[in-house]
Image (cartoon, helix red, strand yellow):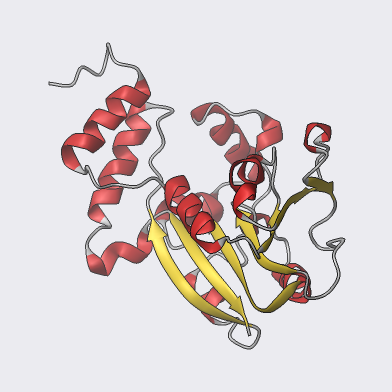
Amino acid sequence: MLNIFTMDNKAWSEKILNKFDPLFKHRWDVYNDKIKSSLNEKAVWIDCGCGSNGLVEQFGKYAKKAVGVDIAVNVEFKNNYIRADIRKLPFPPGYADLITLRFVVEHFEGSGVYLNEFRRVLKPGGKIIIITTNILSPFIFIPKLILPYSIKNKILTTIFKVSDDDVFPTYHHLNSPGKFYNLNNTFTVKELIFISDLNYTRKWMFLILFIWHKATNVKMLNRFKTNMLIVLEKR
């Protein structure tokens, strides 16, 4: 029997996973695998909203050129980091083969200006890989519907043990499958999959999310998982 009181959160949660869903892949593993499989020695890759630039540091060696872009100051990443607004990328038209966005698009106050800029910078047939929250999930939709940002911010920082600096306003203007499929004049949806978010921070939260994960493995409920991974191709 698993002892909820003596095991640390991560070890306890992973024992649950190993016993009841040993084939489960975390959202970051799915996303990282998709990035790695999309890179080659000829690829030019821009990671937009890169944060600490960890993905470029990890996978940049698989590309011809890889650069992280963020508005934050990350002086320790001089060689492959550019400080810039991703609505005004400092690259010429047709520069990149791949753009990636890890939990960035939910913060777009208006998606059009971002998507137009990404399209400008991408080569013909270039791709965007996105991982983001799914507004169809009740874990995303209900807080958005009933809670003001100040309260959501307090809940997120408390439950997930993060600082205020790591929580940004969310708008979810692009966070449903239909929104991505409606981009068909400019981008083609090459792949869209739904992914569960299983968080180790608190055991009770892990259990709630794990129960939801198992429930939404049913085909007709799959679209209500908490996250989405989308691959767009420039038309």
